[in-house]
Image (tube, rainbow, N blue to C red; front, side):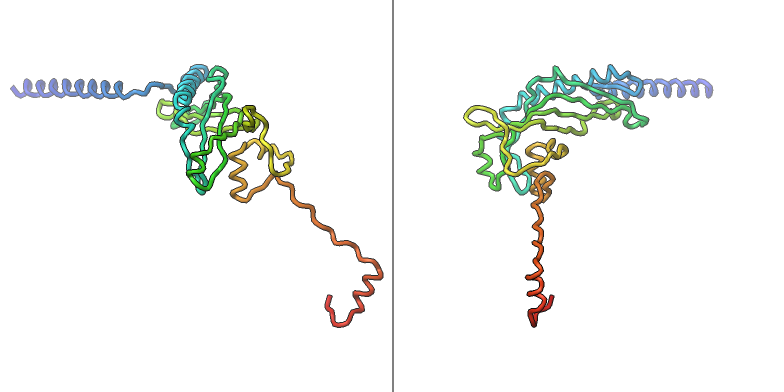
Length: 235
């Protein structure tokens, strides 16, 4: 009798264990992310995943372009408008991934693609920014950075490098006229209008030429002699 009771308890425990494992597996499958990968996946497969993610990002930007165009952005102490356009879509996007010696982030990747950023000038008052429809157009490339975390690719940041800045004059895009003389400082030029404006706000002027120092004219012997014999002056 005691043997049969022990066997029954063991059988019941086994059935409960199977049920718990089945429920846990079903719950895990339901919460699985759409894009999954692991450290053993090859670079080609990961690059394909990133290109697909960027394709969805570009499509979302196109859908929201009208709404973003009228949205006023607040960045103390100024107001402005900004929206992004990907003129070539994701067709010419280039992905590059790299394996990491890390269990938490086994892969990192970058996707680069052409981009145009439209931005108004900065305004001290919100109503002035709301009524401003004169956008500057900056053309360049954007690099979006991803990391593989817990089996899912996560976007962690992006960098836009402007190659040229233009303004619309009488329906035609022409280069923006600079108000200060520039020197060939390529690192600051790549920041574009927004980056250069923030440098001005912070008091940084890497491309503005410093005024030439005025040299003191050399005194003639006669002036020097007259200065040294004047009584009551300290030099």
